[in-house]
Structures are given as structure tokens and as C-alpha cells.
Image (tube, rainbow, N blue to C red):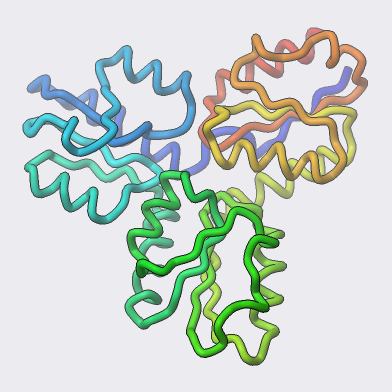
Length: 283
């Protein structure tokens, strides 16, 4: 059996930076103050379990963070009003928001202040999307797939800004942007907020998927970019298996494959990818 492992599999820059910040805080917390993250710092259950073992707690809201605690803002970012609430109650904040997400927040805020209505390609329930929306006006529109946005039905008397969750399908977003920019009656500014790492990861996964019998994607099921990797691979006609841990691999099914592709989400630790690869190579 041949296993083709994606070079882009594993932690992205934003995840790496967020975890490094949390690691340094744990190491330098000589006074022993409580450390909380507001929401999971990344979407990987194995990583979260490791930090819980080191005493890091996940808070669901600012009210759950003790006043004298350290509070780490997750890589996905948080809504603006939630951050203001945290600061008002006196928590010591460490901002681990991904720089790409922070830039998207800034760009959306600027365009919204100029009176443009945000059209956001993303998952409404995702924490990053909730944070991005807090920098837009109350009428912002969220759509999970390009076909859900009725471009023909948009009010031509209004001004729009089109943006995307940083881990969305770049090909689908750019196709939608081209359609909207080609409409002479539509006043729209397109913000290219999808992360380059996401683009490269998806492109490599699709190339591998088109040349293997099955594609294995390793990562947390709560991770939007991991699920998107599986989706783009399936769009290429590949059989795709998403696993959080090596134990979930359907070995009997995979034994029938001659070539297997392996990639992983941006929040998947290298040790999990390595373990999955070892099992596949041993089949």
C-alpha cells in the first residue's frame, strides 16, 4: 500500500501561535493564578484534554471567569462586546486570536462604518463567524453555501461588502465574488479574508484526492476547516474518511485500497497525524 501524506497537514500559523502563547503563560504563571480560555482555544478534543490536565479551564462566558484569573481569547476570536465585558470585569486578558481573523475583523468593521451591509460566507454557529458579525451592522447576512445567497434579489440601492470565514472554500467564494463584481448595478466591495494556508491545504488535498483510492482526513469533528477538507476531497469524487484518532480508522475497508491520501485539519497535532500514517503504512 502507498500512503501519500500532504505536506500542509497539521497546525497552521494561527493555531501554532495561539498554543505557544498559552504554553508560555502556563510556564510563567509563577503566582499560580487560574487560567481560563473563553471557549475552546482550538477545535481539537485531544489538545483540549492535554491542557485540562495542566489545569486550564474552558469558560463558556465572561461570568465564568474569576476576576483574578488569566483569560485567553481563543484562536477563532470572540465577539467585540464579549471582549469588552471581560475587560470591564478586570480579567487579565491574553489575546490569542489568529492574526488572519483579527485582520478580517478590522476590515469588516471599516467597511461597515462606511455604511456597507455585510454578506458573510460562513457557518452561522461557528465562533469565528459570531466574532466577525460583531464588527458589522445588525442587518448582516450569513450564508453557509454560495447558492444560498440570492444575488439577483439583492437591493441595488444598497452598498454591500462580501467576506468569508477564514477557513471557507476559496474556490466557491471566488466564483461568487466574480459573479457579483460582474453585475454593473451592484455596488459591492470584496474582502479576500480566506487564509492562504486554507487555500494551499485545500488545493493540495484535492490534488491528492484525485489520484488515490481513498482519502483520510484527521482532525476534530468540531473543526470547520477539517470538515471542509473532507468536503473538497469528496467533491473530487474521492472516498473520504474523517477520523479524530487513529483508533477510528476503518481498517477492513482501507486494506482494500492500493493508494491512500492523508491530510489533516489546521488544529490537528502532528503526533496524531504520525500515528494515523504509521497504521496505514502497516496495513
